[in-house]
Image 1: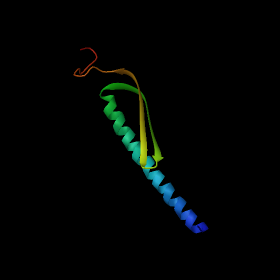
Image 2: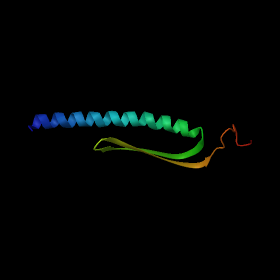
Image 3: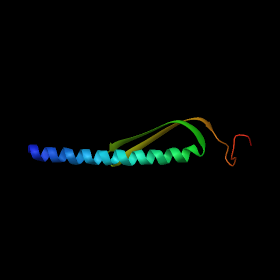
Length: 76
């Protein structure tokens, strides 16, 4: 591959990675909002790894406590 072709290929790859990172930030925010309805989330990690057949998305949440289903407050 020529130098120009290599640079273009790297630019396309970097743009694609940047778009994935932006998408994952939005997804992480949505996951946090959803989980926060059911638990006191203290930490949320989202990672994406490229695999042979697509992407592996890993979500790890740490929670201080999990709320009781059907209760609207801790006092119930």
